[in-house]
Length: 382
Ligand SMILES: Cc1cc2nc3c(=O)[nH]c(=O)nc-3n(C[C@H](O)[C@H](O)[C@H](O)COP(=O)(O)OP(=O)(O)OC[C@H]3O[C@@H](n4cnc5c(N)ncnc54)[C@H](O)[C@@H]3O)c2cc1C
Image 1 (cartoon, rainbow, N blue to C red):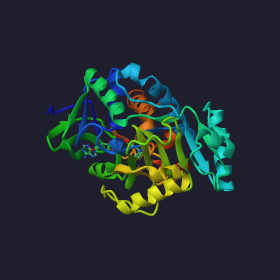
Image 2 (image 1 turned 90 degrees about the horizontal axis):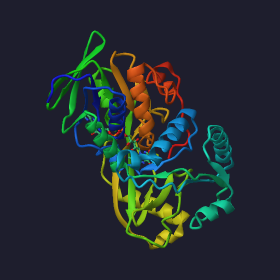
Image 3 (image 1 turned 135 degrees about the horizontal axis):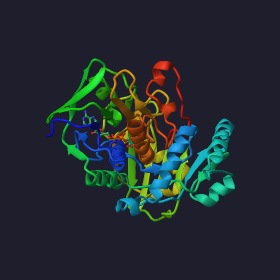
Image 4 (image 1 turned 180 degrees about the vertical axis):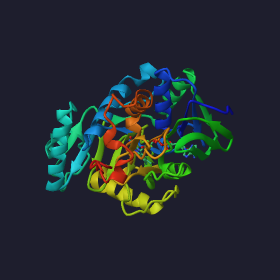
């Protein structure tokens, strides 16, 4: 392993790869990405691949909006098939309070150019005739939303970054971050030591642990989330939108020749438990059948667990870490990070090379906001 670098990025998920790619594309040389496992094996591998612009905070809307433009042209730019299916996100709402909140968020999204709209129960029926409308007061729909293959999306960034000279080292766990006189000096890894003046932490659900290596508290905690995929199932068409019952967090969308479903257990405490809970699978499937009875005839082929990387306001830490010069972070995307990878890559490159992000103003997501008590809550968390 080399013994020095201009910039070290910790983590080769969507964030680490997008950041390294954006830096290299801007002409930065001497970048090393350190990954303890392999490229796209962390939270990115476990994600549902959803890409949406329906958020409640302006910063998330902008990040998503900018990223969608990249996802739409990703295949021609990166020569990899990501299967981006813009079949829309359909939110089902079951209370007047949620209606009021979503209508407020819609107004913000629309003012920023997002083609999301309110849909009545009749319109919901047209978009997805398979959901029962019991208790549904209405919903929101954005036809540009959709989902894509998270692995290939990350590989596209990683491969192009490598072509531009970035060294991505797999199987190298960072076990120490050197800090002297308030400045980053290097990283210690399972494979050797690298001297560097700049470290970017992009370590997903492990970010609190990695932050501690530099003596800083980065409030990102892992929460188990499970996904289940059905056997091939053609009772429902593969053209359906991503459909989400917002009050329970139940969602499903067509995937391969079947459907993918998930539903967060909001009572479960933070942990690194990655086993699949069979009882929760039953709860998930019962709720799916309650909302879309046609799934009674489907069978689950497999399930897996991964970690949401959750912060106290469900928004990420993106920016410089004030306490240590040369240290930056892009982590804690609270379950909606995959989709924002392109914009975060661009913003982090601008921050590191120009001193501030210009693609999107990311200061509302500065890491210091937790210390300052300036939380910036995202409402549309699934
Ligand atoms: C079930 C589920 C569904 C989801 N659905 C969606 C969705 O529909 N849409 C969406 O946008 N997002 C979704 N997400 C969230 C999304 O997966 C994450 O926000 C995103 O992948 C985070 O990317 P990352 O690069 O920050 O983290 P990761 O992909 O976890 O990458 C971090 C990397 O850092 C490495 N690492 C950690 N510690 C060290 C160390 N000490 N040394 C070296 N390497 C280290 C890890 O091995 C890992 O590869 C979902 C997540 C889950 C679990």
